[in-house]
Length: 281
Image (cartoon, rainbow, N blue to C red; front, side, top):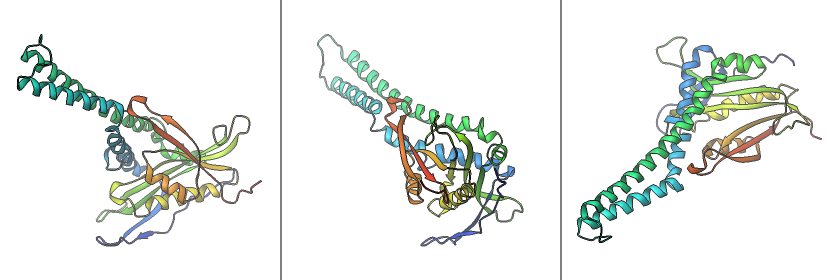
């Protein structure tokens, strides 16, 4: 494989419609000194920020069967307690005290079910991030650059600090020679590249940063004549990312249900884009 030079994109500038001054940043290769900020971006994008996978998953959970069952238990229990307090007996053999205990028990069960579901959603997504720290995040430069791919960050200098950039977003490109996974197959392996860890800080979204880091990754992939396709996986809990992928030429080629069924169906969607410059059949 030919040696591909690392490069830096020129400063990208966006001008909001109103409010703060324009945002200036550069897209450059990842440095080891960026690690703590990139790690924090991972958890912010998936767990802690508004619009994260956890945030959207928790919102959607309210309409899924486990939480609906929990709501029904709470309402039923509250009704039983209310009836008992007002002298209405649901069964002649039940004393008012026993009836109230049954009602409170149902309220407690419903509450516990909802809390458990929500905690499990957070647990599963946080585990995804924890697993990344034991995989590609152990040594980002070696995992991505050392294998023929790359990892880029959008960064701007911190005010009053030398050689200390604020990382606004990131993306990784993992080169996979002779890949047998879709869109390839065991019978027809091809060299591909996978987009990974595309994340933008909550405070700097909708300012073109995601597009800028994706442009860097795709330019690197397009410069490698061995690559057949660039592909990625995302979920229906990441609608903004899906809209970006559609806009820059990716096509959806598959999807599957992932995650525990009790939390409702989460669809993992697979996208691909042919390398620019690759001749078509």
